[in-house]
Image (cartoon, rainbow, N blue to C red; front, top):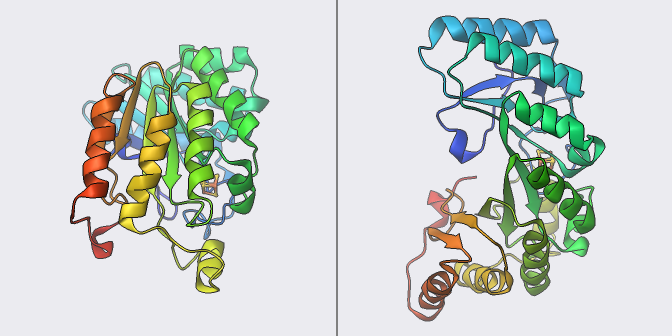
Length: 289
Ligand code: SF4
């Protein structure tokens, strides 16, 4: 298998076979993200992807999960994705799920029939980075989409029958905009009503535009306790049907997990304890993105 540059995948794809169908991210402008800064976006030749799949077949016994990388595989035309999914079915009949990162613009560009076709050919879950529900913050971080587009894209995935996992980044609005970040994010996630919600915590990497802002004093980061206060505000305002909430990523100061809305009350109590008591949060040196 040939991998180009650093390959990223969602934590839940830790044991998946990863196949790069694109290199980098077509957007590549978010001010907090340095994942694909060293890569110029391009689509891989489909023959190369087939070769990687064939090689993987020779080396791996049972492959249950496949993740199509890099940053936004859904940017590809449906014909390309369908051909790759058919090849996967031929080579890995045991594969139970194929997943991709999906940007809201890619999802909106696809028709409902396109999404259903992808579902029928094996894509069972899509990961979408919402980051924040605040239009002001989305603009600040150059996400390239509005909260309304986030809602439209998220709902479209859910309606197509594909599972949707979304992420938010706590602290993304800094000290100045923490409240609007929490309240507006809760509004957007409630409207989308996804199957999974992951909450990461902002880490400002020196290789990003956001770092310059932080260095120049234009943005103040939240303390671990302030992150808990912001998270409490988010959870308090969140109204979802049946959503698995996880905030146990390497970037988080404290591990949190709950099924929402069922366990909302106990999650709020847990957050109250973290806010009121003299807790020891994870040290900065142990945090990773
Ligand atoms: S956050 Fe996602 S969309 Fe934004 S630059 Fe990074 S990979 Fe691309």
